[in-house]
Length: 142
Image (cartoon, rainbow, N blue to C red):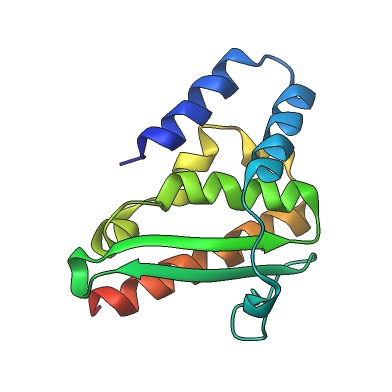
C-alpha cells in the first residue's frame, strides 16, 4: 500500500548498488524537505525515543477515517531528517484509515534500512512510526 512517492524512492534504492549512495540519497531527501517552522517545534510535537531531536506535526484535511493525512517534520540530524522525508513519502496523501494499515517496517525493509541503521536510529524510526500511526488511529476513531 505504498504511495507513488515511496515507490519512487524504492526504485531509486534498487538502482543504487552501494549503501553509501543510498545513505547520501536519504540525506538529500531530507535536505529537499521544507523546513518546519520553529514555532511548531514544541514539547507536544517532539518525538520521544529518538537520539536526535525530532518533531512531527500532523496535518489533516477533513475528519474521520477518510481524512487525508500529511505531516510536517524536522530533525537536528541530517540522516534523521532524511528518514522523516522517507516516512513522509510513505504516508502523505493517504487517508488516516489507510495510514493505520501500512506495515511501515515491511515497506522500509524493502529499502534495506533495517540492515543499515544503528540500533538508536532504528529505535527512533520506530518511535516516529508509532507517533504517526497513533495520530492516524485517533483521527480515524480507532
